Image (tube, rainbow, N blue to C red; front, side):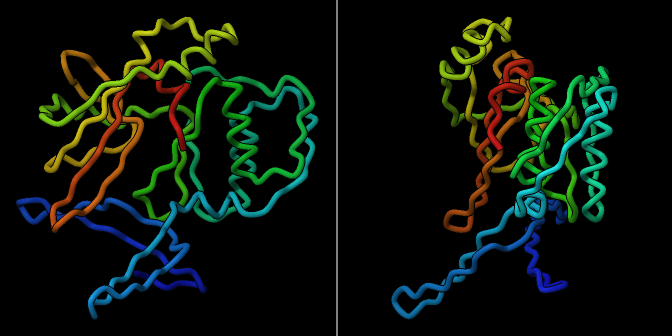
Length: 233
């Protein structure tokens, strides 16, 4: 834990079999819990990524420049915070197109609404010591083929029906098949491309836990064109 300017930061590092360390998480601690079981003290910490700073105070602003690129407005808002980086994964540079009102929304809520004009999501990077956000799912790297013996498959019918009803999807039910895999020895990030069961998929959800001294990673994989619509932040 690191204390700086009345904030308590949490950094989690992972050392592989070669002793090389990799950061799993860097964020702000929200809650600290101390519990006692059979005279053994346990400290539990609840932390969140640095984008939390953008999701605290509701704001009201109006933006009347119809020709302003959406990404430019996002960059302007991010400039209110220290060391914020927003990266656009799209080639298209969409404009605002109309009068836009931010009414009693946090900046994070408003940024997510702006991202929806690309039919995309905001992907926060939880391994950096500052705010780093991608508009859309990033192509971080090709992590190669995954060989997982513990996995399950499901079809996100709710997401498919919502997109189909709105007439926006252009995708089939099969595109919404997701895979949840469990690994012990491979660290992946949101947006990483992998090959699994003969398909090229992207990581759009990561959950890591420690049980009985063993670090376990749970990854949710899906097609990029579908996960851009169903990813949950």
